[in-house]
Length: 177
Length: 156
Image (tube, rainbow over all chains, first blue to last red; front, side, top):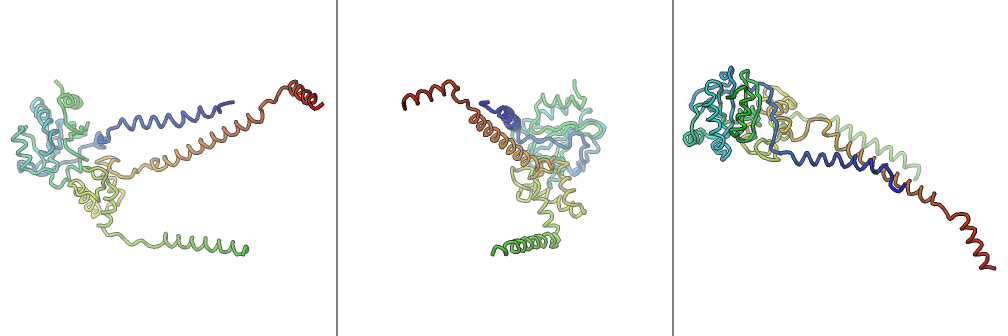
């Protein structure tokens, strides 16, 4: 009876959950926010485009598409990601559509970006009021939504896409070579 | 003096109760839409800054959310519906205070459990120690007898 046996029950009861909390908590990325839109229909994104037309995301239904929230000031992430988007758009032309959403940017700056880094020809919705960004729950560009032909959001990527991650997401949409 | 203590205490309690009742029952003045919007904005996290509410932030995203709060209020939606509107887009993350009830109950529950366990532990330790003192075996009877005999011999 030198050590009360309760001690050997109490210590693990207190320490194991604490260790578990610290372990899982420290491993989490505070910037990683799961999107509640995944598995749900994409909200209708409509308005004026960079080229002065009106456009609605409903016209994209029928083929899978990508919605990319970006900005010309988003450097280097959006610059790094741009060729990946260009590559996917040309590789799956006719089977995949792309829609840009300008995030807190001016049309002039956005046009300069496209002149400098290449224009894939897909529409870019202007979002001067920030309304579209709120509809998508965008916290900072680049953020990309992968939407199936029925308009359901399959996945969301926060941060720049690479050729590898893009290929994985596109495979989820049924697009692969 | 002693006989007065009870009535005085009762009167004080009654007075306190009346004050609380007055405070609870007092009709709260209706908030203007702007005040309501401000209240809701203070509960939402600004999406493009860290650790600021939508009400405090001057970023474009916070402005867009404030504008939408105003529009939703004008449509007759209540505070809970408006909060849900933004949770549906950003997730629970957008709320500065968690809405799940267990998030509020868990910490006090954990502390209470820990205190209970600690108390049980300390009590068990004390009881065990008290037990060891009592059951400490004395000298064997033969030794005791020998000591007694030795002392007697010295005295003699």
